[in-house]
Length: 462
Image (cartoon, rainbow, N blue to C red; front, side, top):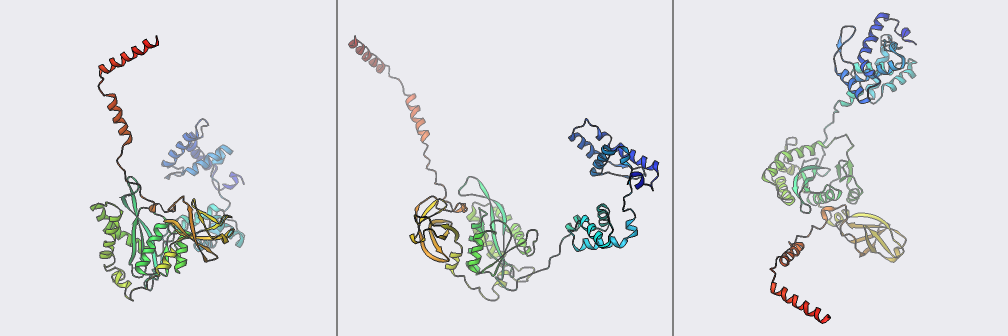
């Protein structure tokens, strides 16, 4: 279909006038001597201006429209800038129910694209609708995908029915604190676990390293203080999504659940607790000064027990500690089982010399295990002792005889602190000795004696 056929309803002079208006807008940018950067600047400037259109209205022309007009002109000349009537013109008037069905399809699944909906309509009714027309009609009804995606979702309220049914864990980024092993300071991070039913902060600790071992140790301390949770609800951060934490929960019988990315249901309680911590604790801690991480933890523990866990919560109407203990103290976890749950595990094959390697260390195991694939269980903060398991049964301990590491590299907070400086300045001592020898006064009498000895030696030679 040609432009003249498609736009038969528009008078010829009017079409030419519109084409000339469009050409005036893009004429300067069509200069072939312009560089791409200069052409882009001109087009952006033209798109930001207000223009008076041939019908007397005033408005702007988008950058995409100007680029499209430039492509049309380069391909087919001035005639391509004349307005056209699309093949589906009048389709909205003739088939209003067709677009109501398109709107229903978009409401049903907002992720459906206009092209996909147009294909569904063509398959159902045999009517071809352009993607552009369909997109415009959906936008007029407020059903464009960008707007639907921006609408807030409504989440229902949920609360665990009893203490220790669900614990929620998260990490709060805190202030800079002097670091004991490096020069300067690092941001402290609070690993915290909150009981969903009572809103009790079961335990929290400020650490300098945000890694899986820190989260595991804080969870261990929380279990020792408050008992075992039935479910643990965590986000998808690296400290909470790893095989070692999964093993910990599996050994203790805890159901580990991770929130879906972009779906924050159930995390509002811990976020509210973090807001209170920022406004009531961190504000005062920074005002008073934080000498080190230990002092920060001591003050936080005292504040949590004296204020956070004993104040009346606005939603429950009870103090968190009272609601948590309403049915009696929770049963204690088995310390030996908890210790085993917090160990890490690696699979290794025993070589022909009855040895296994782990992180540069060599260990000797039972010779009967040569060629077998065994499980090594260990404390990442003490690599001197490994327990060997074969098919889930303990096969003794591995004996360390080649030491490369004492601590797992993934646990930098457990590394030995640097040695205290002795204050010995060896190069300074050398410099002082050199200065003393250089500045020592010269005895000319000694020089004369040395000269006489040289003369006697020369006479003997003669």
